[in-house]
Length: 332
Image (cartoon, rainbow, N blue to C red):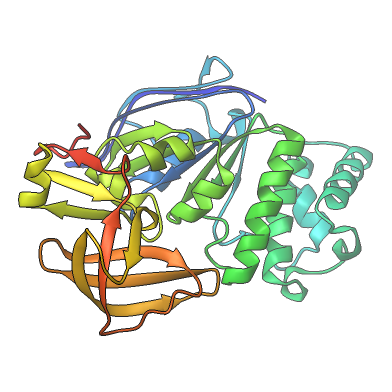
C-alpha cells in the first residue's frame, strides 16, 4: 500500500497540451476514480502514473518516492487494461504468474501466489483453461489476478468493465470494490461512467479538457458541484440547468435543480408544462416536461406515477435544493 501524489502534472503531444497542471493527493489504501468525457485526459493521466507516457512537467510520487524517471516495472504498480491483454496460448495459471516468472521468482512461490489469488477471485477451477474458454467476467478476473499476484503498492485500472454487458458490469464493479477493500491496496480507476465512479470510489476526480474540475467524495460532488461542468456531468439523469429571468431573480446566471428535487403534480404553484415523454422504469419514473419559462426539464418521481405524454403538469422545485452558478460557471 502507498500514497500517490501528483503535483502540477503536464503532458503535451507536440504543440497539443493534453494535461494542464494536474494535482491530486491520494491517501494510502484509497480508491480514487478519474472521470470525464472522452478525450478529457483521464487515460493519459493514468498512463503517466504508470510510466507508459513521458510527462512534460510536474512530479509523480508513489509512497513518497519520486518516480518520474523510473521505468514502469520499477514503480511497484500493476495495471489492468480495458482489453484484458491476456496471452491466448497460455492457460489462466500461466497468465497470472507470467510477470512473476519474468522477475525470476521460484516455481513454488509463483504457484503459491497464483493459487491464493485464484481462490480470492473464484478462479481455482479455471486455472488450466485458456482465455478463449472463459467468459468476459472470468477474463477480467484473470487480468485482476495477474495484478494481485505481484502484490503492488498501487493498482491502476483503465476502463476495465467497458467490454462487459450491463448486468455483468454491475456485478463486476461490486466485486472489484470488495476486492480492493479486502486487500487495502491504493487504487486509481479510470472510467467514463459516472455511475460506476459514484458506486465504487472513495474519491472522484473530474477532468475536462485536461484540467481538473473538482476532487471530492462522490456525495460531496453530487450535492455541491463546484461548477456547471461538474453539475452536468455527475448525476443520472443529469441536473436541470436553467438560465434567463428565473435565474436572474435569485441573483445567478444559471440555476440548477436535480430531477429528484422536482415534484410532479396536476395543479398548484410551480412551473406549468406539458409532458413530452415519461419513462416508467419500475422503481422510478423519469418525466420529461416542456416548460415555457425554462425549456425542457426532467423530473424523477415514483415508479407508479400515472403520467403520460400530452399531460399537463406542474413542477415544483424543493426548497433548499436550487444550485446557483455565476456567469463564469462557478458555483455561487
